[in-house]
Image (cartoon, rainbow, N blue to C red; front, side):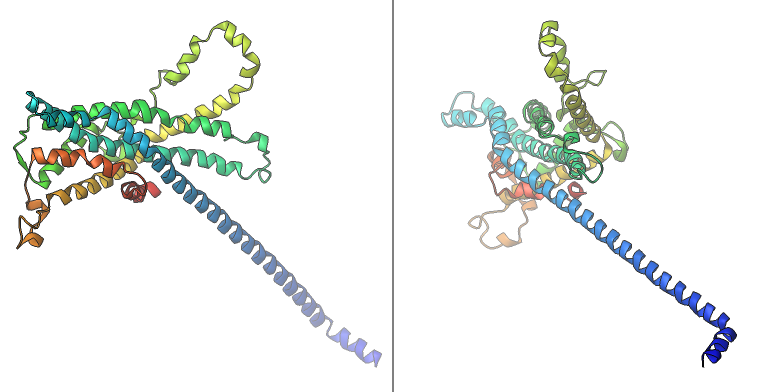
Length: 374
């Protein structure tokens, strides 16, 4: 029996070797395939998780931006009311003064300036805050991987103190920036409508043409190629730099005396790293604001905002039922005329629609602009 088996194996040993090698290779390939499949599944899961984290991070930035803008609305509205105060002029007109025509002319300029300045202020605050949160969010996203990339919490780049200082730079836009926007808007409005009579009848298309003319005076592009141009509105976002790249606030450090520097030398030793990071964040923000992509996003937001503003103004051009009892539904707002004197209070009141308290649909429409979500 054993002799037979021995002879059998001897005669077919090559077959057994081949089958053994084939079996071993099959097992190896099976194990290798399983390992690669497991690695691929783990890689896909990691990519899905990373995408979900990035999407959550982006959505969180969107919500934070919208909530922050809504919290800033009272400040923006108060600033515009203070710089473009029409209540005093309205009160004077109620008293029938001798210079009634002169007051109406001032009222005309302020009434058109208020909604235009409000749209620019709101759009610029939304876009600038979105840029800030995205720049800062990128560093915070990297800092969230502490321990996985060899870094520690002490090596965090976007510390809470840096975040606070960086986000505080929006105060320039909320203060000096809005003041300059209002001044430029008043000048542009005066150039466009100063010579228009209060009795002149205007259609909705005329108002849209006036607003477009005002926009062209405010939005000056440095090249004919829109895709590679920068806008004159960029100067309102951040304080100007000198030839060495320092801002006005940074230049004030030169006024510190030598005694003060020596007295605070221990504290100063801890500042260079934070100042360097803060300067990097500010420079990245400035570069982004001066880019052509930023111009495209800002222009898209302005187009959306002014379109919504014109839609709201169009409601005032609809004829009243008692005036046109038969064909009121067939008359388009574009076919209705209004004297400039009646249009003035309509324009003056648009600021409450633009900068109204939450829920503010005007802000939501701007925030939903497609280019702003890219």
